[in-house]
Image 1 (tube, rainbow, N blue to C red):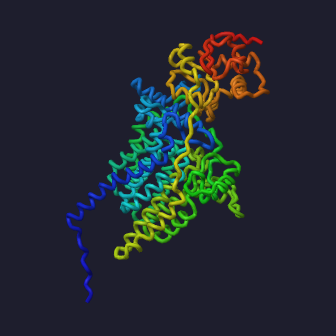
Image 2: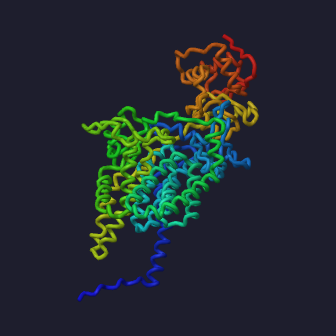
Image 3: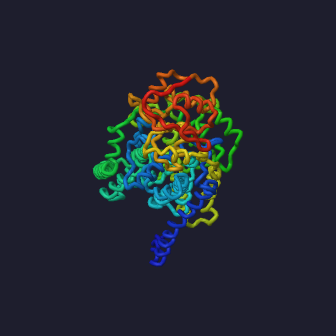
Length: 599
């Protein structure tokens, strides 16, 4: 008669060793992630105060925008108060509502000492580096909580934290690239609905995480909510008998989360939706922000293994924007499908796999597309039924790839863990074979260090010109050029002025979201054309010039130009000789009243 062998209980010493090893891993793995993040951003760390990531052959205007927001936040902290949520420090005289802009409020406040001591560009490099390492660490800790082995959880964290989607958003979308909280939000949500967490305590934790994410980037919170809903639906469909018993506690936990989130962020949300300068719609053509099926398999230039010719041909496909978030590569896609099928009975793998697949399909948007010789109509895509819902109508669906990459990393980690534990007595080489295959599949998404270049330096004479103008703090200044470069120069120097126009988002009189721009006025368009050297620019009428200046009511006009330029000549005709001239900068005081308008 065969007697079942009684399992051997681990000794007390064995438990201590396991706990010690786990404690070491909790420090060692994040340390390795930080080293990887520094290697990925080393070209910035060479001179973080004057270098930024390159988008194409130049520095993205978004980077200058974020540097301005960091300076704005730090200035408020230096004066002993929180940043105002509605301000005329940019886009004067209308101003902007920061809750409708990617203002990085919380990172700007927390890192204000870095900004005040070293400048906003250094702060952005710190934030970028922490975004890669922190995002990887967050998923690693969540995978460990859900009983994934240390080594496999470490691989999953790396796949997410250094994923192609986060590397691409790292070019300038810091509010998306700092994806540390989504794994923690998903973890708290799952602990509430599965009963693994205490209802009230975990609900409060979830609410706090959601509120904090609001002050980092609301868009990523919406993406995370979509992923969370998908996970809960899969869990409910997989365990239908558990739904009635879990519905009440889950509702209580989620209700607690909503209350906690509103306590922290309720006033800010009121300012956003009921305060001044509220908006609706999107300033962008959201239909263009979608993935194409080929994007999943054609490597972008930022990957270690890439094809410049193929990627360049794909990039020429109209309309092609700067974002390229979908790539995972054929090897990893095949491995993920095999893992999902092979370990389908593991509810962790099943939930993550379905979430990954649905998010990737959502990211295709709602437009017809050609994949090889196969053309699929937009009506086949599920996002066509969701795109008109509130909030979702403004979503840029290609950015769902960030959460999809996290789900893919979870599929890989949980599957490897199952494969390892399913062969406890197999030879070491056989147990390690699935991990080796997974590592090979991950190699195509290993990123190259981010390309970096010098930012446009502050023009010679900038600070001298402002010192001689002796403007009052907060004085309105019409800067030429009136774009993100002027915002970057103000961020670098901390000049306490209010910029007329700028690079931001503000509502039209009807409330429709649009880009801020001085050039939207007739006089602004003409000044921008003169700045750009356009030979055929037609000057506006005297009445139009007077009306535009009467609306702006600037205390001064400051132009980066030479004295003999057409721009300087025009400004001299309407304002008189410049009050100051320093380096490449000319400055005029503006007296309110009739302009000279000489011919």
